[in-house]
Image (cartoon, rainbow, N blue to C red):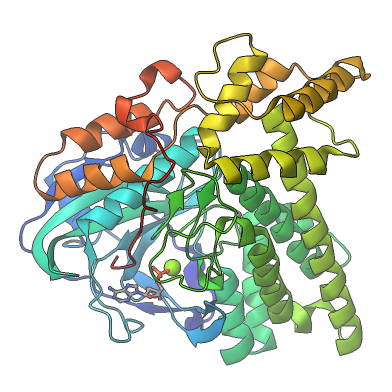
Length: 481
Ligand code: AMP
Ligand code: MG
């Protein structure tokens, strides 16, 4: 039996921020996955029983819990919409072993007052993808929500045919989004806006309480964590796929993994999601989009930044400019680390761009190209084609400058720590989800086991090695989540 000690600090906010909900009762709950490692770190214990299965299926509320859905809005592909959790219910908050607070939220637990025309349900494949991606992000050290469980419901749900229904339970530092601020700015007013900002500061950035302008400091702090996050996921070759403002968490965690995917052959304009036809959320656009999303947060916070609207606007603009400078700086630093140095120098940007152009022209596999360079530095067989000699010579020259500097990096160690040899390749992930849907869990278990140890090349499965990426059709992800 798990130990549910749930709190609900969020419910101290004004009522416009949530609606109490009842989850659907489902016919035949059955475990698909239970994340023992996460359950232990959340202090829930590791021994779920039938009551816990009922709770995680939405069939039973944990004692004392009043489940609620959160209201928010957001720009979806650039268009402002009133949203809210259409198919999610927060069970409550837990404090983990380090004293950090997490929301536990069921996803796919039935329609809420915010469901619009949606059925409130989720299906197995996309919930397993969310599970795998969150675990991988956690394993490589990227701040991310993580799934505690996926439970089969025994229902059959219409999605591009009929699919097995499932409910996911995820732990997130919170579900406060840029879209939560947009919602209250448009539909609430200055008082509930201030209440939300104070709550977010208290929960995520308590050190800012004493700042002379805590709301401006908050905007900057969210910017700091978002620039870290997006620069790091771009360096990993990750394409989130739906960087709408309702999918941007104030905490700085990655959340809402829908039609996301990792670069195979490198292309700056690579898109995987079938619904992103204009390429808004392409790999190489993500830094600019993160800046656009931050500008939406700044807009929502304007009334709090200064009493004088002109001053508020100037402060917001400066903050967004800092964001844009910071993310481009962090990308250059991130790529520098992938190439063996930890401090930027003039010329680095050119060297990085030349490498990426070579990858694009030769349709080289993104992550394997970096792993090959790490292996070359460590005097190992690269095992994959290297860039042309002219580039290699310039790169080695840059490494010599690094070793002559006052505080040189150890390129082999830095590159090994910046270029994980394993990642959830799109095709094997899809194959594992398809097999699980048919009741064959072995490919999913194998993948989950291997991806939990992404720095260890010996845990790689043959399907996680690059197949010949040149000439392969681009993998497509679909939004029928
Ligand atoms: P997402 O694209 O998953 O970030 O979801 C965008 C919005 O659509 C959120 O408000 C979700 O709660 C809502 N939504 C997504 N799928 C469903 C569904 N099947 N039923 C009800 N609401 C949904
Ligand atoms: Mg979402």
